[in-house]
Length: 95
Image (cartoon, rainbow, N blue to C red; front, top):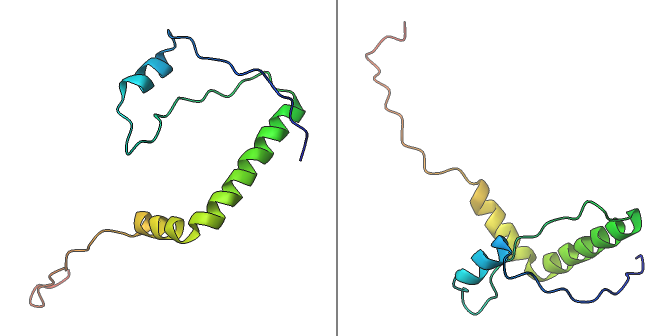
């Protein structure tokens, strides 16, 4: 994995609309509110690779911990809803 450069922590401007709306929402079950994430367009190839590898490592770690839960959630999302039975009148000619 590429070495990452340490950067000073930056605080968002209070005028940032994304942060302001995130602060106005109520956290669920003690979780912090989400902050919209913008991808900078000025990363070097090395910086982009470092972020890509971090996300890939994070994905693998989440999969290792939550594999069954994720599979169950995916299965539920992809299942079709209940299908109403189709009534076919045998006396009705098809043509």
